[in-house]
Amino acid sequence: MNLLAIGAGIAAISGIGAGIGIGIATGKAVEAVSRQPEARGSVMQFLLLGGALSEATAIYGLLVAFLIIFFMKP
Amino acid sequence: MEIGQSVVFTIPIFGGIPVTTTVVVTWIIMAILTIASLIVTRGWNQVPTGVQNFVETIIDALNSFTKDALGEYWASFAPYLGTVALYLILANTIDLFGLTPPTKDLSATSALAIMSIIVVIIASIKAKGLKGYAKSFFEPMPFFFPMKILDMFTRPLSLAARLFGNIIAAFIIMGLISKVVPIVVPAILSIYFDLFDGALQMVVFVFLTMLYIEEAVE
Image (cartoon, rainbow over all chains, first blue to last red; front, side, top):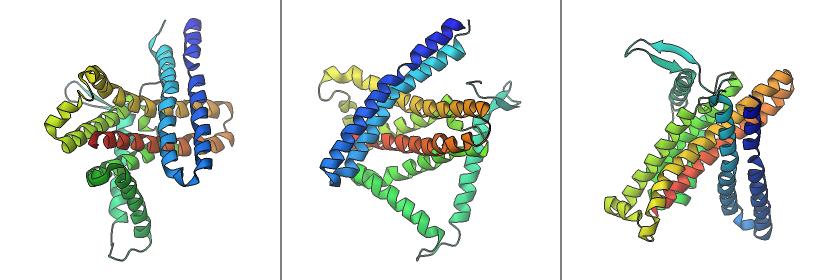
C-alpha cells in the first residue's frame, strides 16, 4: 500500500503543468482584453477552450491516481 | 470511499440486472425536468409575462449563442445542446440536495460523450454529404488519415474524462472536508465545489461539443 500511495502522489504532480498552463492562458487573455476591450467575447471563448484543454492533463493525472488506488490492489 | 456506484436494487430478469444509484438519480432528474417543463409551460400566451419572460430570455440567449457559432445549421443542434445543458446543470449540482451526482460515474459521462461525438458525425454528414465526410478523413493530405481516426476516439475520451474527473474530485474533496470540519466550512466551500464548478463544467462540455460541431460543419 505504501508504494501505491507514493505512486498515486507522483501521478497527482501532473497538476503543476495544468496550473502553469491555465495561469499563462489567463494572463495572456487579460493582456488581450486590456489591449482590445471590444474583443472580450471572442477572447473569453478561446480562454475557456484553452483552460479546458490544459486542465485535461491534470484530470488525466487524477484518473491515473484513482486507477492506482482503487484497481491495483496489492 | 468507493469509486464504483452502489447497487440500489436488482431487476430479477436475465439473471438479474443491477440498478445503480446513477440510474436512479438520473430517473429523478428526468422526473424533475419533465414535471417542471409541464408546469412552467402551462397557460402561455403570445405576450409573455412572469416565468415565460425568464424562460424565453434563456432560450434566446442559447439560440443566439449557437447562431453565432454554427451559422445556418444552428436550428438542428440548439435543442440538443440545450437539453444537455439542462441535464448537466441539474446532475452536477444535485449533490446540494444530498443525492449522489450521476456524473460522478464514468459510465454516465461516457454515454454523454458518445452522444456528442455521434451528433458531431451526423453534423459532418449533413453538411458535407456522405462522400464529403469520407473525403474529409484524407484532408488536407492522405498522411493525416491515422490522426483523424485517432481523433474520433480521443475526443469522446477527453470529454468524458474531464467531466468525470472534475465532478469526482469535487465530491471527494467535499467528503474529506466534511469529515474534518463537519459544520460551517463545508457550506461555504460547497458554493465553489458544487455550484460554481458544476456550472462551469456544464458550460465547458456544451461549449466543446459546439466547437466540435462548428468544426464539422465548416
